[in-house]
Amino acid sequence: MESANSNRSNSFFELGLNRNQKIYSLNDVPVLGKIPDWLNGTFIRNGPGMLNLKNRRLNHWFDAMGALHKFEIRDGKVDYSCNFLECDSYQAAIGTGDLKFSEFATDPCKSIFKKVQSYVFPSLPNMTDNPKISVTKIGEKWMALGETPMQLEFDSKTLQKIGVSEPVPGAFSYKTTAHPHFDKQHAFNLVVKFGMISYYQIYDVANPGSKPLASIPVKKPAYIHGFGMTKNYFIITAGPLVVVPIELLFWKRPYIENHKWRPQDGASLWVINKNNGKVKAYYQTDPFFCFHHVNAWEEGNEIVMDINAYDDASIIQNYYLRELEKPDSELSIGTIRRFRLNLTTKKAKSEILSNACIELPRIDYNRYNTESNYQFTYGVSLHPQQRQGFYNSLVKINTKTGENTYWFQEGCYPGEPVFYPSPKSKSDQEGILLSIVVDTESSNSFLLILDAITMLEIARAELPEPVVYGFHGEFFPSA
Ligand SMILES: [Fe+2]
Image (cartoon, rainbow, N blue to C red; front, top):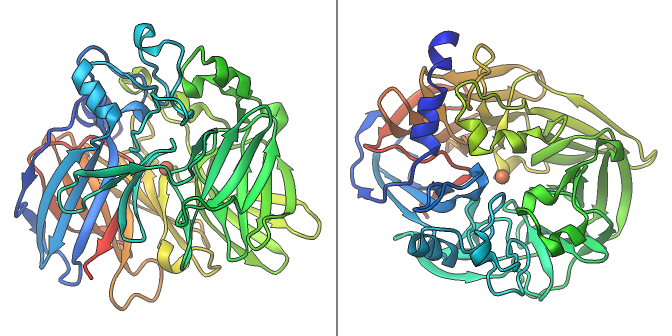
């Protein structure tokens, strides 16, 4: 397996990243296997759709013009469609063949740039509005979310743009996350506000215009991709990949390259009371980096928090296209790290729950987020026998036992696995996983449906074209 697959890392790059998404729709996609008759609804996934502009290739996996992919599943049949996020950034990119707005790790060329940065400065006219990371429903609105302030509302039938909105309006410089947390009436999100004094703030973005629920001053804000939530607390974890805000003001290099890894500072964790916004406890720990929180809950006088952590931030370097296209490219190994934050002693302990590589972690969020009886995390992985190249398998991690179960198929590169429970499901493994797979053997992609108990294939819907390897999706069951 090892030698055969290592030769394919470049074929994955050409097929799954170094291309622009073909836009089309197809009814009655050929299905192998039998889709469960109870699985009726819409699976939508966000992510890169265009990494090669007419006049230049973008630098980083996170820079792309975004695209949405939709699979309508009904009575065992599948209809597919896709569309670019029709934001101003995309329109300008296809109109000029170049960037007009700053992205994560690529700036417009100097003649367009004119020293007016855009990634996190919403009051300036060339703010990027390319929310390519995740999808969600906030109220009745279907939203594509990114880290920049402007989010895109789209029509779930056509995937066309309805409008863009700023859930946290205000003429200040900030970024947010594509991973809000939900409870019955609220959609909470973290905002990093930049200034002479910067702030980490929590907002209820289901109530646009409302005041921040919490506000923590910070001198050197960290790059933060998500945050944690229990029933009564928010948890902000800030690894030492930090920026001096004045660097952003001068903006001599792309957004993320203004950040510096400062392991000597360690990581900072805040536990914040949801009711009054006050800091309940603060912790400093050994340095780590993470994109994704997995789950968190309260247990006696402790907060238990699982995150998808790395020892350092080199994974961001790994995701530059110039690195990913190398035949011998390697990714840093992220693992599930469990923190126990004692609210009385203010001491933090951590342990790695499993040796499996994992990224794009998902749980049965609707039923088990904030719940202590959560057990399983699913994600993309590097198979233990093939840790070179890009994510080549899916993994299910039993967080109680550390046991790992993989789905692997030679030449296949599965994307984020989205869990959806079966009708009589009584645990967070009784259900299915949905994942869009890049298949280098047949030069296309397919929607994979796995049994989450066994991690064996139930069915796949075969597309005629490859889907550019993306980020986050959601399954929305039919009403
Ligand atoms: Fe993410």
